[in-house]
Image (cartoon, rainbow, N blue to C red):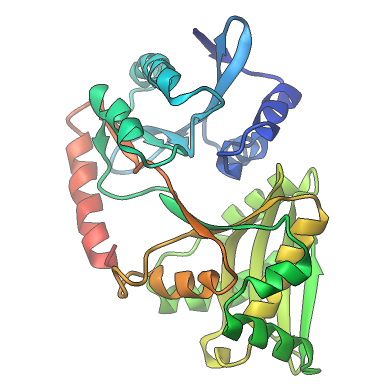
Length: 342
């Protein structure tokens, strides 16, 4: 095996198109997004017998607590688990060289691999340690959208199906789709008060604009808005990439939580994903509402489960320590995790 940078977008995206375990965080567009933020990126390809068998977008994240190298939801590989050790070992050796060159304090990998004892042991054997706080979702609620619309409706929770029909018959409810970057101002206006209520720091408008523009280049993104009696009350930020629809950001003004706009907005996004050729709809973050009903994701997870589907759990975020400064980062993230109830 050998590792080298991939500079060709078509090669990168065509490889990813053939894989099933992936998210847009390893897409070419996510790399372009980080570049627009001023972050350094590297697109590493791992080759076996001159054939591309794995890719790993790597980003240098600058932080006041210490810089680090991040591999978001990667590496993406088509190899069997028996060869995965070689992939991680080779990638780690390259990242350790890069860490020394870039003077970072640690390496963080957010694997997209299935959470099995075998996959977890690969990281342990290479001296990784479980990160104190996840950087990207470590599990996701997903829905197979290859069945017909009628079959998808039949597979939903009865109450969810009822609310969709109720919303469809309500003349006061209107769902609007947009691909106009100017409409991010409205999205942000709706999203910010919800973020404040749920006690998390929202992404800046500039961050969201750059993300939107990166995926808009190939028409892989849409905004959805819900109006009730002429007033905008809900929104969703959806990415449609490589055969998957992603429910990435969303908000519903709390005073309208009894109005069933969110289920209809979600159903419209699912139908668009299906019509665009996607086979899976990824609802993004998941937390078991039965095991931890106070988890910040518990309520949203109950909502997502109403549409049917299944949970996909990834190997937890892994850190490789480079310098002693890592431990300051570790302590602060431990405190943040406790305060957020994660």
